[in-house]
Image (cartoon, rainbow, N blue to C red; front, side):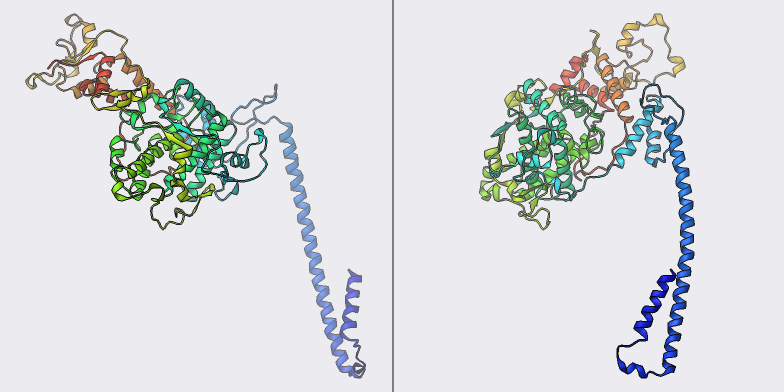
Amino acid sequence: MKNTLCGLAIFVLINGIVSPNPKDDVITTGRRKNRLLQITKQLDDLVSLVEEMKKDKDKCCSTISDMNGDVRQLNNKINDLDSACIKADVDIAGEEGKHCDSKIQIDAPSDFHDCLDKVDHNRMSDIDANIWCLRVVLWRYVKPSNPDSDDLDILQEGDEEVPSRSKRNARFIRRRLAPRNITQPRTGFRIRKEYRALTLDERQRYHNALTTLYQDGTLECFALIHQMGIQRKGAHGGPAFLPWHRAFLSMYEEALRQVDPTVSLPYWDSSIDNNIEAGPGLSVIWDDEHFGQGTGIVDSGPFANWLTPTNPLRRDIARGVGSLIRQSKIDNVMQYGRLEEFDTRWELAHNNVHRWVGGTMSRSLSASDPIFYMHHAFIDYQWEQFRKRQLTDCAYLNIDPQYDYPHTTDEHHLPDTRMDGMRFLVNKDGIANFWTENWYQYEDRPSCSNNCSNSPDMFCDQARQLCVGHIRFDLRASSNKEMAIEEPRAEAMMIERPPPETEYVEEQQFDKEVCRIDPYTDGCPLGPQPRTNAARVQSMIIGEQAMPPGLSNMNQALRSEMTEAEDFPPESEPVFFQSAPDEPNDQRTMENGALNILTAAVEAKTTEAKSYAKDLEIVQPKM
């Protein structure tokens, strides 16, 4: 430090006093003295600054020393923990022979405790409850996908080298699906059928192809593309909705066919399930041979235990939210002639199905559920029917469907805006004719005129002339005794029941077997039969009258499904799809399935209801 100050002083003296100009030799002694005083003052200031710096250095060294001590203490603690056996609240198998009682404590968000409060601890052990609720925390705070990532624009042309099958990525999917001549698919023309019209072999092949796409990550890529389309606002909420999804489905179907060229994307005509009087939640479509479990985490069926990028695959069908497609809705939207009159109405109807299925289907990663693609294929099917009508029934309007792109000011939906995730296309490309001319066409939907596609999963209800889905429960009673519904008694015969204490009738005064079948028979403890069929149904529901065995079994199964669903953690994001304001929610919920079937059976106005009455051994009164 001393040498540094000396060097600095010499530098200052040389540059501040000695002048190369000879005229400076005549500087007066006074001026030189003042200059020296100024330099001295500057040197004193420098010395003071250096002293302050030395003090700061001492403080800094002291702080570092303290920190080193803290680090040593922390390191000792880590070594102590490392040498001890650490055990969390959840016992996960470790190295054999290690056992201990130590615990790791973490600060969990309130989500964890909220989840624990909702868990039924009578049905789930404390350890299982902690596992589920820790998953809630992990799923909810997983890093979201970046909607601006170029990696999600996967369905694009490119000359990149195709990586090996074990390293499938965005470039691979992009390269194999989107041909340079987009008007012609790589795997040729295909016909799309209603899902239940598939043969058993076709259905199995389709399920196998889906499983392959799930296992190699292709399905997740498509789910992220759709999520990006939502986030960038180019796939929903405007006239690009139908064109965007038409191109998206075509790329997805191409991926399926490159796994198995015999497979085509089937469509799910949800109106067939909506036609079930007892409610679509009872449809056979939700058994393990078809879509799989419809309530809670999907842990059975062809898509059991699948995971989305953030959550396990989940469904919450028939919760009194949303609705499936109704035939009356289809008839209504087909009245219009231009796409701008059709698209918004049809998108809102499509939203209701997402909400009715619930779970994953109602959120931004809805394309993680295979139901998504089959649902959208039906939406596309009806749009194609609308396009055909434009050329026939609406010929007087002189509309060419391939140029009927609706007017909009939304920059995300303008006709020449590039499609999110498929930027080799612009929005108006989605209404071009080449899709249904070169890529695919649809087999006619099931109807009574084609015997409901000869499918064992549905039948023609002659009374309504509609195809109706079979339910997934066997209602046939185990007893041959008939549950007879008598002709309603006259009002004068309807008397108030006696109080419970006077209601008892001695055993010898009535036949127990007769009263088990019909507790309202004269002489039985319950007294006179209710006047109306509705009251008779209610008496079975509340347990006054014995419920038919087959229906009782179904009711228990539904309650079990609902109870198990309540044990699972909630979804990690809010519902995305919003219901149409003029569309009522379907109130035929899972909870009232037995009530709906009984009500239909005792009225027996339709072919479906009469089959319920027959299975339940309910005989209608002779009029």
